[in-house]
Image 1 (tube, rainbow, N blue to C red):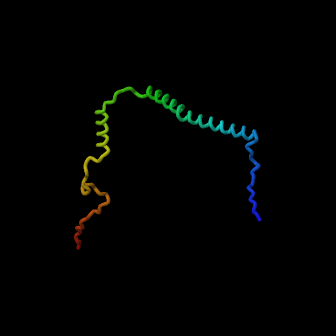
Image 2 (tube, one colour):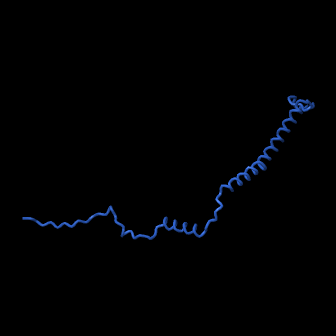
Image 3 (cartoon, helix red, strand yellow):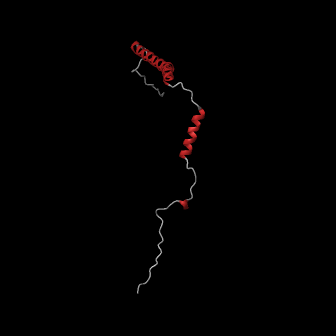
Length: 110
């Protein structure tokens, strides 16, 4: 007794039919155009747009020459203004919550 194995055949999709081959070719061509379009957009269009933006911004930037010494002087004065000038002794600061000692000098009146 021999056991026969049958492999199932798929009849749903035949590559022999021309309409499936044409559809497959159309999908592949559309995919290739999509990939080419994304490549051109990311590598060429965005680069051109950035260069145009740089050219426009160069016109708006002031062509004045900065004096580095003056800038450093201002930054130094701001640092002095922000930082505490001296460490204060905590005992010299008036404490509004301190207790006041009152001397009681009452005389007995008889």
